[in-house]
Image (cartoon, one colour):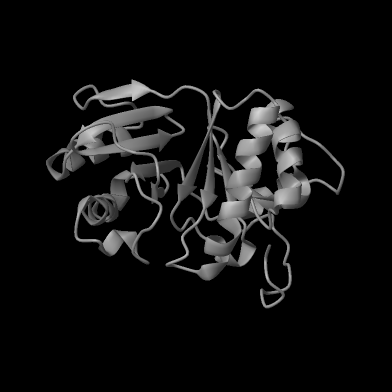
Length: 233
């Protein structure tokens, strides 16, 4: 539960900055430094390479860590909307990744990768960055896993903890891919609606919706419908 000390709720639509691609680093853990891009390792090298390539990128690339484990030596990456998992990358592979995939807009032909199956739900749990998501995440993840099991979706929908995504003031934050829809102020009581209406029914839950990958804040505000309205993904 979010404590009474958290800020009053503000309007959600338009609170997601524009980005075109989301890269999740498969760290195999759910605790990260406050600034993952300052870790001195793969995350920092990737963030620096993306910053240097901004002129070649049509719109920004978002980089976060998640608790999914890498499959072997090196770092695995989950990339959306490409729906691709890059396997066992090293820092030396980053220039090819940025030039071929992130700037080129297509899965790399030189780096090992495989298509992703199913849907992915990411819950911000980065307590080291802000305590609100650290408090919200455990109960949200437990509710998600229970609801997915009850609906027979546990094998098709993958749930992961993620580092800072932006907007801890809107905790709990839940992201659903491959659509790239963001939800804020999510409580465990909201999970059945997210599962039934969004994951099963293909409809946006507007009263919790913050925005979407590839959509500007102004466009998100325009897309947002009155309470009770529905739209197809």
